Length: 464
Image (cartoon, rainbow, N blue to C red; front, side, top):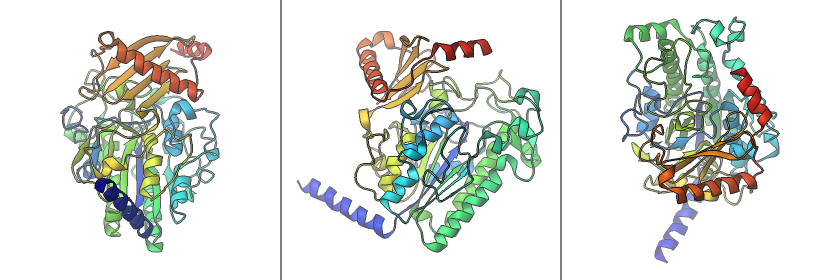
């Protein structure tokens, strides 16, 4: 009883503190950025969960001054489904698994709507890549300011860089000494917004959705020269891609430095993650070296870990520096988490699939996040015929037939070993496989999720 009263008192005190001094929140979202593509390990138990070649001191700074989630996931292995999912707090099974979806974000709960429900004083901004075929504008979704309906082309694709055709038709990389990959100018706009809100004493939420590391590979001559002098990369990406990563890291550093300069870092949460795992190949890279996502299996587009396990690091008030959590979390948990951090109370509706992981931020020893079904759901049945469910330490990966029945089932103990290849033990644990499959199928039926379409699969096969 005494413990219950103490928790209640702490909750009231916390709510009071939020009302008096609501925290600022920054979400840094990178593009095609793999789990092991930082210069410090994403999992201290896995030495290969870092790159010895890349240099990411500012991303490391967030990690060292806060918490790293070793089992952090993007909602999808593709950019736009992830962005809808993060925006609305939904699995992609609910809000759409591909670029095109009937889901209209403006008709549903969104991060800026949730924050303004918690506290109407929040000012919300989105800079950078919004997504492809998102239907709703950022402002229609509740943002007060944004870069608009931006997409891959905004941040540099071959046809925007003077090349007709695909990435294979142009050079392996492009040089831009003024605004490579739009990282400097996008960071400028975010900093201006942060300064304006700090001067107005308004709590703010800003999402900086960087175009790096998405193709095309664009960097400055100076950065490229540094990495050419550094030698051969440790994985299959080229030197120019590593240069682009360092320039992305410098943009992150400028955001962090601005918080220090304005003396608001101690009341600002900084969340950092990616929209999906790293690409399997990069123009100019060498496929004879270690895979770009080593030690994970798979890459972007796949629901194996290489396609969805991503960097996931947070710093902010009450987050212990250098802490580590092995609790599985996903980008669609952000909405509920931000609502909590802003002092929100009550329900956000039945469509919210994510759960708040605020308790993990304050106590990394927390063993689970409460969310509907207590599992993470991943779904891509159209072109790739895949679904997955992560429950606790285990992950079930299923392949569908084009006609919509389950073809194969694979079970992995990814908490201990994130490398799936060669570690399927479904045959040794049929009861767990059956139970996880049932939970997955029950959820997919409940949200009327997309089903495999033989016509889409046939079109994909003709293109191969």
